[in-house]
Image (cartoon, rainbow, N blue to C red; front, side, top):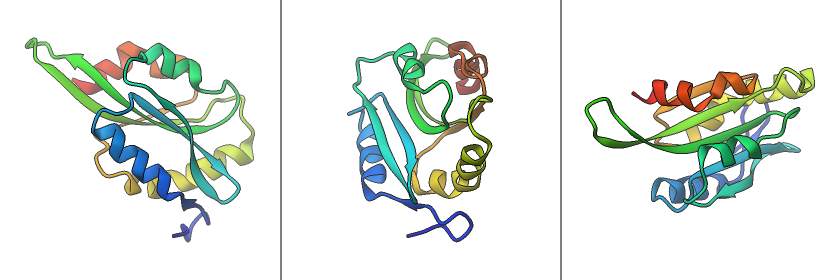
Length: 136
């Protein structure tokens, strides 16, 4: 199903892998736009860390990603939240940023179960401390 605003389709595999992430099969998924559709680029196994995830994002290209964050609350409770991250580095091409920005909302809506959204243009905007503070 193409997005009327941007013409982007979402590959069925994206939704399937996201459902598997919710069942703890993966720690993270990185998506990219390939031609006129959003596709899965990388799957992170459950043992991978937040650093493994951030190191998997390209320095100069936009991506969408979901990350299943395990954390401990201030009350010492173990919790988990699924983050949607729109990665749009300052060094990426303007056209690429526009395509990713115009397709983001529809793609995010196709992934049922996102709990926190984060937009980042620089690695400092998605440091582990910032992500954890957004989860609490």
